[in-house]
Length: 510
Image (cartoon, rainbow, N blue to C red; front, side, top):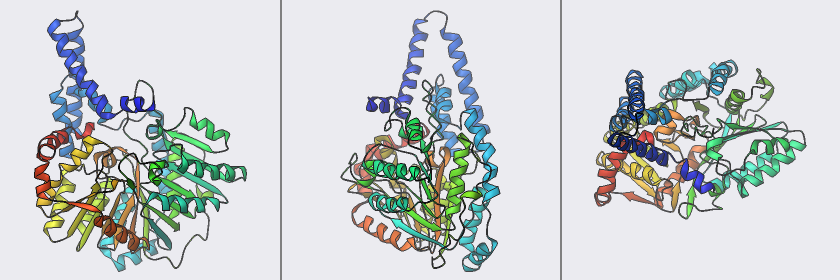
């Protein structure tokens, strides 16, 4: 049954149904079914005209505008419905008001330690510029005295998380896009239940669409009975399933305000390779931070919590003193991206790293569905002599997105970018490493969903402890991945040169 629901709510399936509706209207026009065709057709065309007008007036990327206008013109009757379904920020009014109400809390509780920023400016002004950007547009300060540990797979991430959860004394906050019953989540839940009985405050946020096929109905109520406060973010409303944008794609754990986690790893068994839905191995990445920078994650979680279930104005009671780690190296800056502010923080942070690369730039991403700006930046970096390497999955989780990703290869390779496909299976990591000095590890894919529509988060790192382990993981991943050549692209001519470009025009719908 879950597979049926999953299929029915798939974006491509919904788009296909709308296209069939378009064809149906043409058939109605031929047979003139009663007197209803003309008024319905006129109304739908007006919706499409209005959608095109809204797209043209919106200050968004011209490539994204074109990607929307083309399918609307191809399907003038139902193109407007496609845009209403997938094309813009459409949050339920209550949730939108909650987000707007709590946005000020971020600024009230996250303040930059000017001494830290001044030291960073003296050490590396160009790195400080990236931190200033994240402070100005994501309202998240940069910190020192924060230890970092990089995890090259979900199993090591999970095992260390279980150890930290056992040590919790005050509170545990968890926020995940996907939550699924199984070995991984059940082990975590067992600890959460025990901690709740001991008086530890436990809160859980999971995305309703991300988890809809993996959890029983009324799962929040089940959690509440166990003493775990719970929110299903942006609940899926029956008969309004088209509105699948603006999901909470973040993965955050905060323990006592002292330890924080993020990365690509969700709470489901494939992430620890207890199941194998796509190939022999699921490759992912995560990061653990300990120290002052965890406060960013604490505030980010509470702000998201308050958007749906407002409980407090003052976050300071979750800020515990003496959490610094004096011997920790470098600078750490957890940050977030929201689709509501008009600022593409996730994409811009990546662009800044690409532009600053001198020796090498290594990227892990499950999807490579990017706009012209990112592609041009990658090609320009390669042309100026930077060793640019991108690793994508060898086994797809979504066939059409896989073909769309592969269609980008040839143009990048011709400019000198090195493309690899992870041979053992599916790569879900979202990491960028620049010159061994700066990096981002987080939840943000190189695609339209992450850049334009989802709530996301990441950690910007400079000379942090985790960078050495990240570099080691990337080198080991290159060794077990297939280097894609121009000859490979030519052999896949139909997919990369015909199907891919067509899908590119429809990429916002996929």
